[in-house]
Amino acid sequence: MDFNAISTDLEDLNLSNNQGINSVEFLNTIITKCQNLTSLNISNINLDHIKNNLIKYPSISPKLKHINLSHNSIVFFMDFIVNLFTAAPLLEELDFSFQTHRNVYESKPIKTPPNVL
Image (cartoon, rainbow, N blue to C red; front, side, top):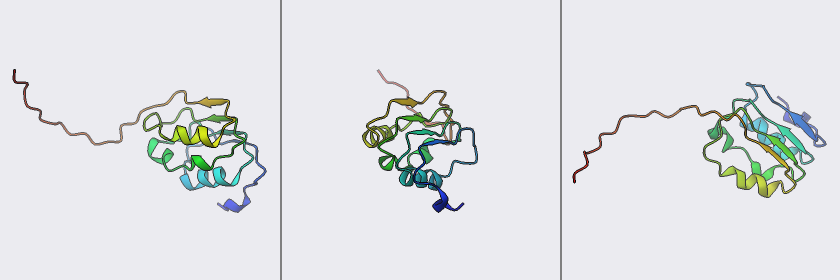
């Protein structure tokens, strides 16, 4: 995709329900280039906490008032939220609803010693 074709005047962007648009590079281009965004809907785009931590939230439009991150899997590792609030001081609506947890970690049983009293 030619990222140069994205208008810098864009104010409202809805990418919801596009499971194929979970490219961090694409989202970062939008976030850094579209500094007039007031509304961003990236709900249900198969965004997990790993990809979410790579998104450049500190570069998001200071004019942003609404962001929808619902129906993704970013409930853990919420450190990015501070960057989001700092970069977008006019933020009025933040939707984190319907977050899911996808267990992407391999877990192995751990032998623990019995409690000795």
